[in-house]
Image (cartoon, rainbow, N blue to C red; front, side, top):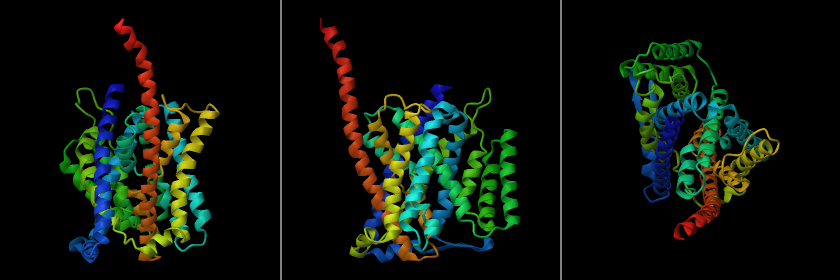
Length: 409
């Protein structure tokens, strides 16, 4: 069981690393495109409407990427949440305590700082949620590139923390961005969830059943007034993660193998391409350091995430309520906490949802703040990880030296 879980964790990390790299490329393309002489064509593309008339769905390509493609991303997140809590690192209460509580601290602290800085700013009644989420793909990609010499426990801690962080962000999206609720459509969505859970219990395997149920559930939540990406989370959490005797893989494992490459290699990069196109001129850069909305997001992400994750972890370990991951020291934990300040996919989504009524300028400024802060966190975190990697490598070399000398005698 332990070997299988570790194998799945390794596969997940590899996929998310590639996805994180593609995400960065897509974001860079969007930024270059929108700030080039051909910037108008970018805006034309994301504002292009794609309608499904019989279903009364008329959304722009940007909306389809946000409401549709991210539902697949959240489905994978739901599968990972279920697996982590059922058979993964979070299944052991002693191991789960530290990343769970650290994630809570990494959500509350950014929200408090953002509210303190941006109190009274239009949109901050819900905009405080923008800096609360860590981007799994982006953070793991940075860790893979610059923290290869850090003990593996660092990757496990960061992944577990980000999984819980995503769960809390999902709850916030459900609570904050449900303006009106259609009980009839909500009942339809719940019926779809019940059908999915029953099919799992009956060991039904055919995608000819699950795919239509997933699409109807997504549409029902959309019509109910609830953000439809939550359909992905709900169905992921209802998927079976333990395999039966004689079964090659559990449904959740099989679905992760099939869906996660689509999510990491296509859905998230396309969303990044459509969401990251922010005009960067002198006015925007100036506003990043003067506008309280931008300062609230920057402070919430860079300071709030780092202080919240590291501070809570340090207290938990100091009081003996949790154990530091094997092989890591406080400086390693601080570097990982800085990576927690990388907010991208969910932060950009929340920025669009929270500031929709304030206006395009506010949304673009918030996105610029998220992008610049995430880049700063990735650079600072990378520098810290490279330094810590050299320390760990030097210790490993020192431990192996006596053995090498002994073998030559």
